[in-house]
Image (cartoon, rainbow, N blue to C red; front, side):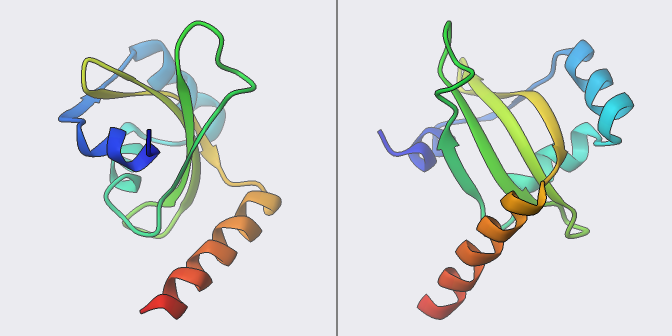
Length: 108
């Protein structure tokens, strides 16, 4: 199934207070920033098969309204996006994101 199609079926976000607190304390990422990222383009979504045993997990690369580039791990539960972790992109992730962004811009 197309990963983007899964997002189209989502109707909102579900927050675990422990994960939200952890994301803030470790990486200074707010729940609002995480949510913004899913509404900005480009957005890269892929299966996170390495870290997913009990439920299907995904990772996303995207940017907030203030253009902060984030890496987010999430799952889908009852048509809600549940953020597991969020942090700034690594250099390698930034290069991948920039390449994808350039490819999207040349298609326009």
